Image 1 (cartoon, rainbow, N blue to C red):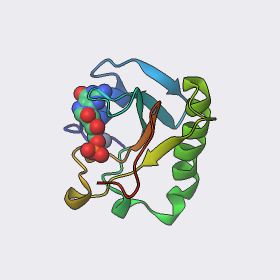
Image 2: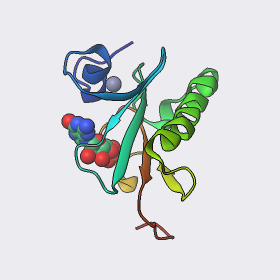
Image 3: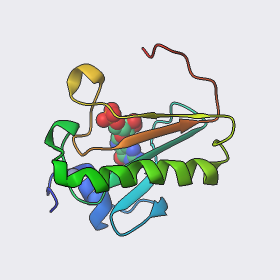
Image 4: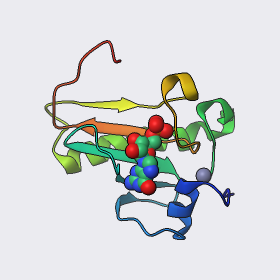
Length: 116
Ligand code: 5GP
Ligand code: ZN
């Protein structure tokens, strides 16, 4: 199911063209338009889920696919050995700005901890 007003659904349905760096039956990934690291990829389910709060127990396999995609894309990007960061922001206080769940895969530089 897709939301007509959701930007990432428009990417998923091809309504807005975007170059995918990774594509499976259930998962897509593309470069962030405003990268926060030399390699900054967004990994999304094709199906619309607004935030982590709306993830159902039955979505566990799909959510796992976001992480296995991150593993594969990090290898593709050459960031797997040095290290990379995976982030999911949920709702406003965490800085979520697009309400279709996505995993940020960041690599190619050193990251601070704790995050800002
Ligand atoms: P959030 O802030 O919701 O965790 O992450 C949303 C991300 O989507 C941001 O990092 C932002 O730069 C990215 N983004 C917003 N609009 C577009 C767009 O039109 N194309 C791409 N590729 N990324 C976008
Ligand atoms: Zn959506």
